[in-house]
Image (cartoon, rainbow, N blue to C red; front, top):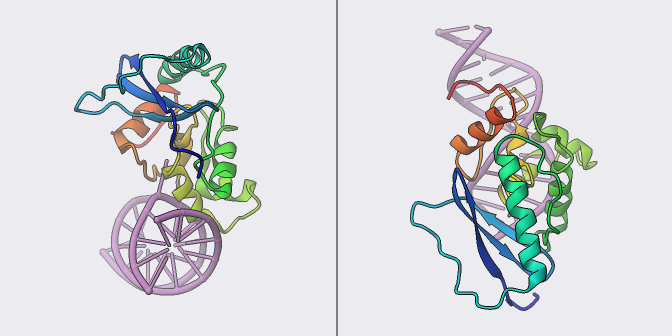
Length: 169
DNA sequence: AGTTCGGACCGTT
DNA sequence: AACGGTCCGAACT
């Protein structure tokens, strides 16, 4: 396991609250939804300029994504924490354009493992960078909502902003 | 139409 | 060995 080293934590202010982003030397490693108890970033005196720049990109992208638009440029992502299967799943998610949706089964198929349907669900739930890696655009096959780790209200909200019609909220 | 039930299937812990 | 952000068909209402 690579040293548990330097994760720089920075907050992203949005109309929806303060997200918490953490960066490794490789890129954005996780993005956390706002919490009830305000999550303060670790005291971080010296944040490398490179990471500050990534953070600007993250901030811009997140704000765009939250308003239902294409996030545009993303910072480099450090998804090394995931398994190989998870990373391939997350990669597939990134190909879903805003306003479009796929089912868990469709993702599984695109991975060449049509039966790994539930595993895809698991991978979505383990996604460390929600919204930017659009796990919310994956619905159940019956056109129903499916689940969402960050809370179903978020899933509904995000989809609606992208113009996707979802069953009553 | 809609709902519920039960198995099958796969990666993760 | 057990659990999920599933899926499908069958058997109901």
